[in-house]
Length: 342
Length: 295
Image (cartoon, rainbow over the protein chains, first blue to last red):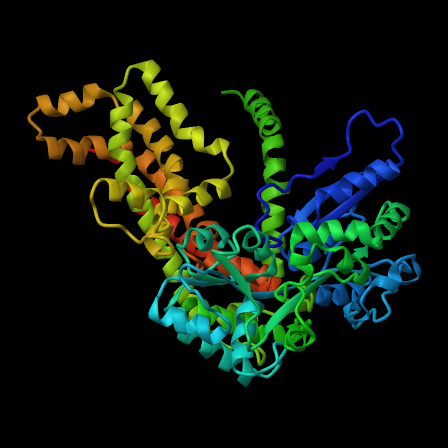
């Protein structure tokens, strides 16, 4: 759900109304559909702070807006590599979140930012995998990228991949046994050729595949773990799998902006979100991975013990997270343009 | 006319035009100038620009100038040509649909006519993405279209994620932009002139070619321009209905500003797009006969 084009970029005013005891404001700028509204309700009820929520559809969109001088936002939710970029650009505020109560529950493995290895700035928010969402009536058994492309070859036009440069080339790199952050033009060329070879069998590069997989118009699609939201409702018909060859993973961190007008309220929100019973609300609604080990224990068993949401160590070892590639991003841009044109 | 009067008139004219001119300068000329300047600057590592002259973005598309870090790639020319072809197809299809319809609507009784015009503009009340999304539900294999075809005993059509779907989507979105100027021109067409042509012995085809067509030409021209320009740069329809397998210049520009973080190349592409549109418009305007020119 997190990358759905936000249909309405409206600020959602929560806890508005005749609020005599307003203690000020807090402005969140987050991915679309990436926070449980109940959390914001509870925060407002407890503190009297009015929360506004604006949404974006990509890290780059958010960065461009903040760089262009957008002010008024307090907290943003960049992916880890964007967290690093924003720190380098001096856009983030040191919060000392790692000294707050409850931080001891955060999984040390989730402190992934290279620029902020001790989490002095940002709080790990949520994580998830990017695997395959499929319709079991069309494909009863699916466990790898190889299975997916073998099916596509026999059934052209029934499989989709994400419309995302790094994710699609990432799959190409994984199939060839190369790291997804490879800076070698030869590796990227291999990935480009692998994807191009499959392209004639693909229906589309798209984010908007959930209704199509549900209806069986598509048999399977490269998609986020958020698909579990639909899988858990119809486990006999739908499935989500982390492919055997490995997959990419994402993680977003919660960061306070240097330009934030309500820094004290933003810190209060970080403290609030560190409570396991609060962050678990998000995980239950989003059906993704939690970075809070105390929240993990509070999850309903069908989520906690689900290997596709909380994979075992052996599977986790095969997950790779995107890093910023700096100037080498150009290699990927050229490969992606070729894929889209040939 | 006395000099004093004309000076006063000129002042009044300037006063009347000032708000509009300022608005255009602030929200059209200035952004365009920023883009033109950005298109020849060095891309910043994390988006934005560095203030160093760097015209090589153009080199990637045109073949010159080329620096050491950029290479010419015909792929961009292909993308521009494909976008052009799709935009022209959209113009032709919407024109063929709207031209006869405009004549029909102009002959309706006034109240029915007002209702039809209201219906034509009705889609503007809903968000574009929502409307295009609805077409996904219509065109997908198990969608509304195929259910209807099935009921009629016809074979299913697999249109989703195809170029046909993109053209359907673009035509749907841009139809009102073709219809409204056409309708305005057709409504102004004096039926007496058509009658006179027939009375003087001209055949139906001759009358159409020499009377109706030239008199409605401004509407045709206006409609074509209004449809062509947004069709050339559109990327939402191609992403949602075309499955993004085929890149159009709008998608390419979006990719440069977001995923590739190369604003100058995106700006250069946008400038080239602008140049292509301008050239086509100039050719079109020069070659279309003006109604006064009809003999």
